[in-house]
Length: 361
Ligand code: CA
Image: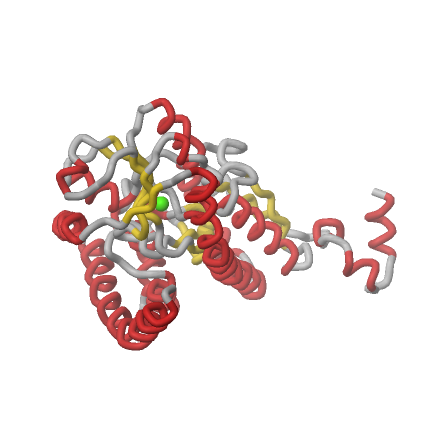
């Protein structure tokens, strides 16, 4: 208290600005309670969410005081959607595809099978009409989301047997959420959508045979290598999985334009940060998985990819028949992915393929 009193009386000098933002909270500060789907200090995703919460307070110079609750600290991971829709908390950080049961189109704002990469997805959301469609889907629940992180193209997953054809998924019990799970269900897998904090125990106990999570940097800390030996590279299910900072819309609308801009800027900053941090670490952690833990890295072969693509086409047909909005979102994503993806393939794709061929990357 003494310190706070001192600061209040101090001129706006270096002493005040050097201290953490919460210590100099404005007297009329707004509280922003954020609930998250990730456990406290969870490597990668949890750390990213905590960084974003702190950054909002920092950028607003204390005018927006965030209170961050990791999964289970206020509500369970998958209950954060209802918590924010009801107005009990102001925002959640999570992956919108956890709630395809609320509306299937929510999946398109995290990741869909054979969908968009980080660059493609952000291009669509920011400059290609995606944000308007996301608003339309979330509006039904009184929510407003912003991109707030991206894991890049995710690993195909951890298996204790090799996957050499679509038939190898038959009878497999696998943790894989979202539409990717629906694709593998069509190939005969029995899929579940466990939150991150519960996967390891289920894999080790044999309740599930396989799991996907994120990629080498995030997966390393999950210790899945203790129960599954084969690690598959880029999968179809999450080509550029996006995380969201989703606000209660009434609360969002009550903010000033400046406050909304600060939250948007913080979210956008973390959207890039999380992706860049992941990309910077994936290579080193893949090597650690192989060298320290004997993990065997595999690619899905073309037969597996083709079987997954046939199943994905059925999933998209089902979504498009759910309602007009689901059809609108699916059509928009399919069209924009082809348009953005085509030019990226012709320029960035051609270049990186040749560079990597020549340099053996
Ligand atoms: Ca995943």
